[in-house]
Image (cartoon, rainbow, N blue to C red; front, side, top):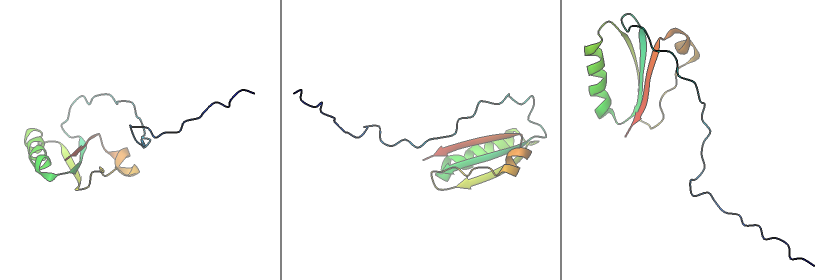
Length: 94
């Protein structure tokens, strides 16, 4: 009688990957003046303060909406914010 094949179980060295939603890129805006753009950054505030200040200085005619959190998870936009905004800058810093 043939010996039963051994089955090995192991954990992935990569770890557990959380599924994420993937969205295609949207077309670039033709201009920024008069647009409503959300700035959603999470993590350490040091770099975001300078970046936010620079963007507001360079693009004064943009209606900037700021969403910040000090956790490592960016604050998602609500459905209403997604419908009304023209752009989003989102990232994580640490």
